Image 1: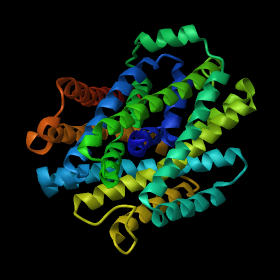
Image 2: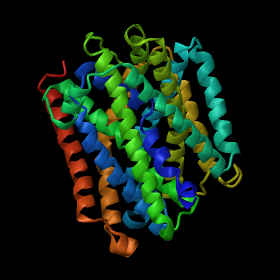
Image 3: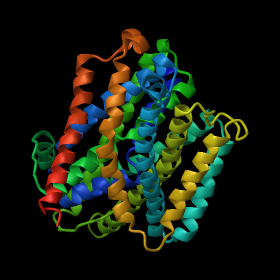
Image 4: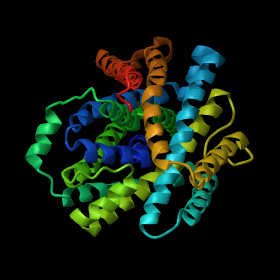
Length: 404
């Protein structure tokens, strides 16, 4: 019973990473490269568990959010730098979430000029009129819709022998598109905003040190399920679209392309998963930014507080969802580029946030006996190093002309 009470922040933050941009990225991975990038999910999954666990542990032990700790330990200049990184990444991702809502409901015949304003209003009322427990329950219920992707993957009837081989045997290419998609794949699975949201959520929930073992399992279960869902998204597109040579640019195209080969029901399930994941992301992304910025500068925050008690917190949240929804309604905006840009930006900027996290979690004055193990430091450090190396390769490929 205690575990069920603790369950929530880890599952919600990990699954919210499989949002509109995530679904688009995984769809592109499967359609373009088949099963060849499945092996990366194992490494990304280990990284996700370790990094999410670090954040949850810091929240439980210190009772403070990540941006709170950054301000206290590194000062306002570095805090401003961290918040700028978060805001740049989050604005682009929030736009991509509303793009995902629009795309998924357009499959069902509802125009974005109705669906997006409607969902902006629904999300705003949900977040500004509910308690933390009530909002968390709604988020948690929405997570179950993600299993639609798993059913869609099975309905595609993959070659399981080939799937298993490509999952355990690594393959890599120095091609520009492969490197960019690899960065986006890591950047959509382990993101800056997830860490700020998770730690703030654990703090607001009031998890104590004696309950930490349950919170740890919440993080582990959430990470495993999130990676499993990513696996089945890639699987469906790799099985159905890659052999046909069908190149997709977003999740809507992937859902529509599945219908002739895997059936309308598989396409329906894929579209349903896209709607749920986009709605969850559109709710949590602005929330993460509001939590982080208000914590960083000492302003009142939390969805358990009334609007009058935390006006800046709710004002930021309102502004972000209005910008995210409003940009999607611009007729000339290339939503595909926004989605891919948001995930690649996450991957490029995340090492900066990860370095802050490593310095904090290894601070014995803050963490006491709960500092990182050598294994955790190795995995988190390797994740930052890999993203930096991939970014350098991406820049080298760009300047050498391969991007063209």
